[in-house]
Amino acid sequence: MRNFILRRLVYAIPTLIGISIITFVIVRMAPGDPIRLFTFGQRDITGEDIERLRHVYGLDKPLPFQYVDWMISVLQLNFGQSFIYHQDAFQLLLTRVPNTLQLAVVALVLQLLIGVPLGVIAALKRGSWIDGAIRVFGVAGHAIPQFWLGLVLIIVFAVQLHLLPSQGMLTVGKDVWDVADRVKHILLPAFVLSLTGIANYSRILRTETLDVLGQDFVRTAHAKGLHERTVVFVHALRNALIPVVTALGGILAALVGGALVVEQVFSWPGVGQFTFQAAIAKDYPIVQAATLFVSVLLVISYLLRDIAYALVDPRIKAA
Amino acid sequence: MATSTATIRVPTAAEQAAILLRPPRSLWSNAWYKLRHDRLTMLAFGVLILFALLSAGADLFSQNIFHYTFEKQDLLNTYQKPTLDPPAFLLGSDEIGRSQVVRLLYGGRVSLMVGFVAALVNLTVGVAVGVTAGYMRGRVDDLFTWFVTTLNSIPTIFLLLIFAAIWEPGPGQLTVVIGLLFWTGISLFCRGQTFALREREFVIAAKTIGARDARIMFRHILPNILPLIFVLAAIDIGAIILTESALSYLGLGILPPTPSWGNLLTNATTYFVRAWWLVVSPGVMIFLTVLCLYLIGDGLRDALDPRLKAES
Image (cartoon, rainbow over all chains, first blue to last red):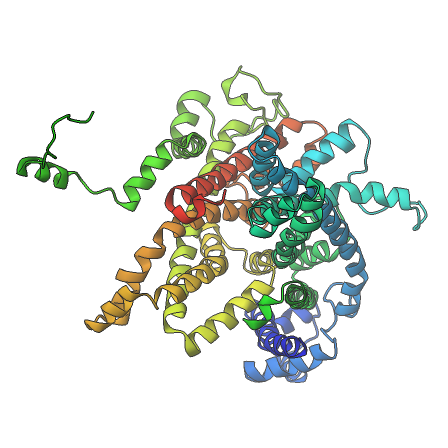
């Protein structure tokens, strides 16, 4: 097991290097001269000053050298100053991280709590109208545009029924620890964010439960005279749950990507919204910091997923 | 109806020829037979073709039925409720009195076009790269795996967002870029299939008679994975349309005045208290289109892959 983890860790290094190259290049290839942008509006600047600034910031070096310089500072978590806020880009980003994590964790829990039972019920009631409805939902949940569902839910629950707030994390003026208010705010965005995952899990669990129920050990359990409930919940379900771990990678990626759009719809002050605003304003240090941060988070979660998978299913280690 | 004669009747030469002449049923004709009897998939095909025809004939409909262009404004008739009189306001009018139904028709043209063309780009790249990596193995495959893992670790929407914000691309460029970002899933699938297929007897046989690598990849391996590529393509187009609409909604994809189903919703938050019907129609179009594509994907999978049929 330790070898497996070590090998998997080593494999992550080239991926991280690749991510950093893409993050560096995509911004460095942008049209427009960063020095001109930096000195924009300062009238007493001469061509000589610009050349000197270019040298000070290392922008006269060949691109690979610039990349190495950038990488060294990034490893010290120094992404430079935000062009707009004139503060450390990474520190600014960090203030937004807990908000996105909150949203993602609630969405993930909703996915598991709703998606898994739906899939199992569909499999147990195979062929019935319940099964049909859950299968239709499994396809429809993928096809619905998240941002649009968010808008519709706002119209229904906030504008028409006045039940839930439409924007933000907290009512202005309320206490930061007002849990009821926070729950009200997180309900809609978390549900919208979790929908794809719910659909996904219900599909996976249905196929998997049907598969497991057809296997020999389930027949043996039945033949022993075990109660139907024991067979399903103790014997079958445990094995059917393995793909929940495998699917987690794709689902986490969908959560991170989806959060960007959902945060925008619900004005949720998270990493996605922050990145969006920074990209519009061409605030490159923040864009780079956010992209790299989110990607590294994904690499780590893929790593944890693979380790968890190896723990749950010993067959995988051999491969 | 069995004959009651004691001897077994051997078919005459003419009858034998007739049996042999019956056209063979290929994978494709079998699949088509199954598809024709799959009502849900045929319905999805029908709806999709209807949408495509409606958008293709956008000029025709807007001139002859609605008498309205997609950029025509009517400041005296803003936020009209859906009405049959005039027909241009069939689905209401927006904040500057533009006809929602006409803009939906033109928007469909853009959204469907982006979806199909971008899918074509990423299928071409994905299949070519995936089959090559799976066939060559070794260094080429290592490089491929590294690149795909890297690309998969950066959320696509982030890359698209940065690209769109920095370069402010037109519809054509955006389509190509989406196409170039979405091929990893298809190429991983092709690589896996090629891995398995290249060890099969027919590939070894082709090698023995001196077929070159390119010929083996395109004439022997590709036809074997083609059926499932169609399945992936349908799902792919759906996913691309969803992404494009989200990007356009954020104001970074297809930019107004060119309408797309996504950018019809860009200003939704400013007017949805007054005119909820403007929010409903573009979303329903996106939802139905993507739903049809996913249903077609499922239907094609059932029709084309006999191995998967048993499972569901």
